[in-house]
Length: 196
Image (cartoon, rainbow, N blue to C red; front, side, top):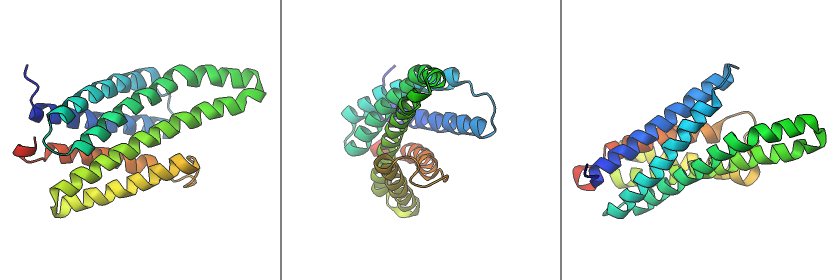
């Protein structure tokens, strides 16, 4: 199979949509206080993001433009692999240690905080990619996409700098990051033929 730039762009867009869906499903299950199949969802996301890093890197090498967007998508995918890996491999053991030794609770909290900082960094990079893709399109949808990208970039960088409690209980960073991911996928699908 020949992985042309157009085909690679479509694959990355599809992977971004799947990532947004899995994150929405995980969040809905968590908020409904249902048992979340973390290994299945996060393990699947780990594979998804590894593939996304490879395909976005390929698109970066093939692209005539949008280099900053492709670089940001590839870097975000790598960061998401790290974040998922931390969640799958470290959350459980550190939670058990914190339950057995209450003095270790701050260490478990630090692992979770690190994971969220990586999560927010990845979302900020996807927001940056959305800004670039949105501005390249012009028109109303491009402008709206760029504005959503700016909002997601600001909220996620604020969460990185000040911690995830910066907005209180409002999930502004994560929610805007997922919306930015969806709009980025739509923007990539809608690129004109010469840009795909």
